[in-house]
Length: 240
Image (cartoon, rainbow, N blue to C red; front, side, top):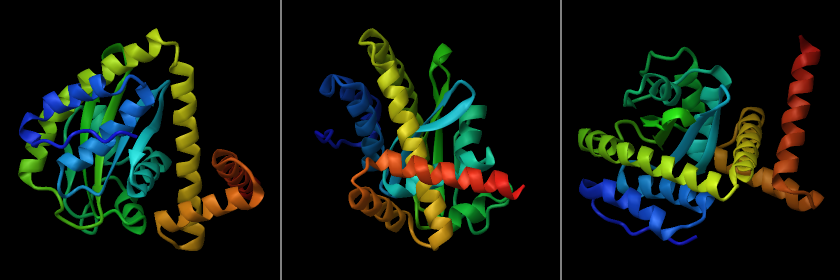
């Protein structure tokens, strides 16, 4: 994947829109967007892009396993800073999960997944729905006030760029492919979360376990993840 140019976050809006010129492929554009967001925010270690589709929240793409773990914990509870940003249209900052009192059990689950602080920006996509860009860090107080203000500016531009990208997808009849990509990432994220809880390991270690199982069984990663998630859901239903 081509790496987007790194510029100051002061002119971040121009950078986001420029990504559309650099990448004609929508999926590659989205991957580049989350990577770019991390580049623009010194304290960020990972970024996830959440979109609301048919009442469901999905991580379309992410840069860094910390983002996959942080997003997934919120989907499990249907609550958290990312979802609050998406639903309220407000920027949501968490300075330290260890002292955070909002969102019920989410802060503790986030800590267990390695997330110590986060910064979520709402994305407005008009009739196409809502979304959020979510930055994560393993250290407390990772994001400065300057990060929040700059991020607010480029997140607004990202909304416009994402709307254009969606139109590109519709024009090229690639929405079905994009949706399948969302589902695949969601299932892999769920499997990573299950392994982290079962093995008491990090997100990177859990992802490596999935890859090892995929190679060992000569199966696609998404199939290994889907089987694991289905087995967990079946066991949960049987235990009720």
